[in-house]
Image 1 (cartoon, rainbow, N blue to C red):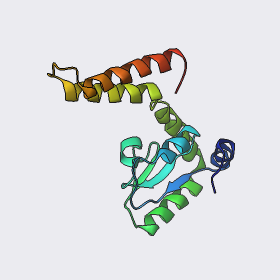
Image 2: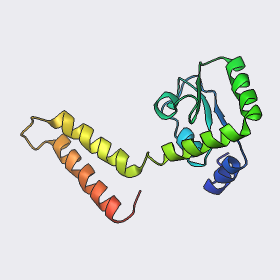
Image 3: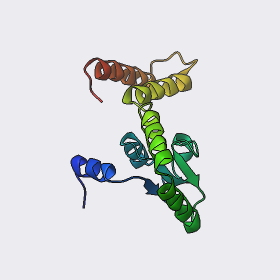
Image 4: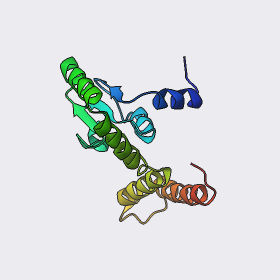
Length: 144
């Protein structure tokens, strides 16, 4: 069953640590959600964690399929509540850097890079222009 946004937020707020022991994951939006809620992260390197987390700063990146590594980090978290709170604050700061505006700009730049040097106005060029227009409209109207 799905949880509402309010239920998810309440769950994040009731936690001290977010553990994501996935063995294979794409980006894992849930990591950014937990970080935005101020939770330090324990996640495997087979997630987006290596791109989001500096070990010891916003949480810990652990090897996959290593239950003992998860247990060690949970025990560490229980023994270091003050440092854990600092890590949660750092996680929230990091999450704030991942905005929709930054994402749209990155997509538009990637498309521009691919199209560099082309002169014809084909479907990819029109798509790049559409992404840029959508980004401008979205940002000016507060749409995410």
